[in-house]
Length: 161
Image 1 (cartoon, helix red, strand yellow):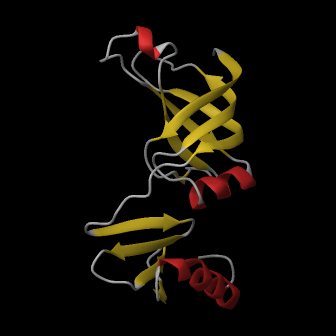
Image 2 (cartoon, rainbow, N blue to C red):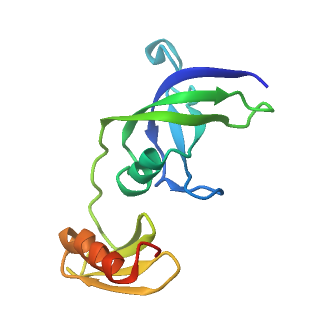
C-alpha cells in the first residue's frame, strides 16, 4: 500500500457526513490539477475521499463546513487500489482557506447540524428542528435561533440526540 504524508487544498463537494465508525466524519475534496492554466479546459479534477477521527476536526466538519468551502487538509494519503477510484486521505489537520457562497433558498432544503436536521423553507421564517433519528426538537423562530434551540434540547435531554 502506497502512503504519503501530505497537504492538499481543495473544495468541499457535498456536506460532510458522519463516518461509518463512531465519531468520524467523511467528505469528498475536489482538487484541481497543478498548473491548471497549461491544461486543457476539460482536464478532470481529482476527487480525494477524506476521513477524520479527531473529535475537534469531526465536530468542525459536521457543524461548520459547507459545500464550496476551500480547505487545506493535512494527513496520510493512500493511493487508490485501482485506477478510476478515489484516493483516500486520513485528515490530521484542517484549515479553512475560504468559505463558499451561502446559497439563496428558492425552495425547501434539509440541512445537518451534527446530530440534528433542520428544514429551511423559503416561504417561512420558522425552522423545524429534528434529531437525526427523527425526534422532534422544536421550531426555531429564525435561522439564527437554531443553535440556541439545539443547546436547550441537549441540556434538557443530554448530549445524545
